[in-house]
Image (cartoon, rainbow, N blue to C red; front, top):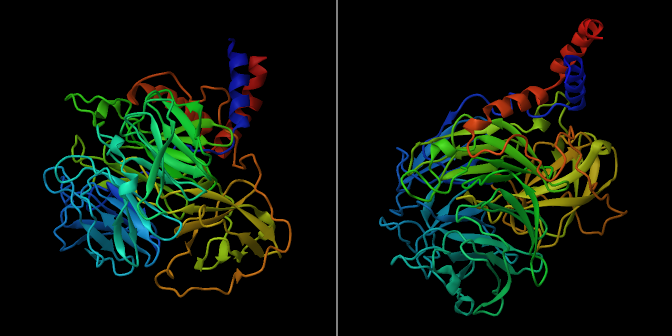
Length: 570
């Protein structure tokens, strides 16, 4: 290609892209925490409850946990007196109180315990739960909220090193009951490791195993529980493979070959579709739901086999440091800039109320001891334009409510979305889910929003966002759904309507409205060559960041260069 031709092609590419990630996608400083955040959850009030190791970043959660404030950046390392080792537990919010249930833990020999703790979202105390312990010991179990306010727990390893094959349900009124009719023997053979577990729109519990291909449905409504096999997974997936529910009945799972699979769990037989490929295996990744419905993929490693012969993904040379953004509406995957540190086994990823993505942890075992975190600013935060604002909204609603919100400019709102806060750990976040809500513009500042039904908008803490035509989201309004009044506030019902919507709701557009349609097109949409480590991608990423970096000033300078150089070229 002649230089003149290359120049024109490069110019057209540069001017075609809008502001995207740029060099500043990851905030520059790695920030310190008191523990490795193996477990993390946004709690009422907007702070992040996290734990997993001792204060030196060593295995044995022991007595330590951390509270981090995303607004101030400050964190508080705290100690509890329960004597429970909270290393590799499971955590879910209790809708009846707004507190967090911490279930299971390590008995010191990498086996389970029956302990149940309660983190108080208001006082930040971590204490033994007054309703007592589980029927079965669990280490690496999975928990999820249920539509009636109960909490379901499955899997994990018991005190003898065997699988806990009988699930159980916790009720805020009566405590724990086991479901012997839903005994799942397939949890043996290491399928006990954080089973992929979700609640579908019919209120059924769907369990997807990683080591074999079976998919099960559990019904807990008849007292003893009932389980049936309803399908099979058409691919292999590592025990450390990530999954998340990104829309109603839609779950994305990463396979062992860099494939992104979507399964519809809403029907009697789940249907699977391989929708994209990200070039390489990415185990130990964190999946975070952005306010516009896209999914950010952070951290992880391209190798399931470690140098020491292990299989938990701690090979730093195979670390994948660049962020990827998957758009479920187009199935495009965009590769963005790299974070500074490898985020391997025991790392976590989480969406924050302000729209940033938290990526932290990794270690215990090493090679790194990451008692720290980094923050990623998606391209919607790279815009000079003013963000939309939610001026007032209910602090609490019930699922199915019709409610009003006050905003700065109702006519500018293109979407109203809600993202459920869930407990992130070991590449799983069973409680997280994203919803697109119907709305009606009533006045220049008032919008009427319709909440989804209880099987879809499960009880718990939700982040409510408005999004404008450029894809820029508001800072989220934290709202309790079918749960206790949020701390520091009483249940505000002044904006909740008991009437049906007064007009046809606005349906969100089927196409994503983002700042720039920057994604590459085609089946293989990941930018760059097919390599196995992040190090080999340096040149490719530098090129991408050059082409897409915050584009205003660069594009202007490039255009000016055209006027000066073009006469010499032609």
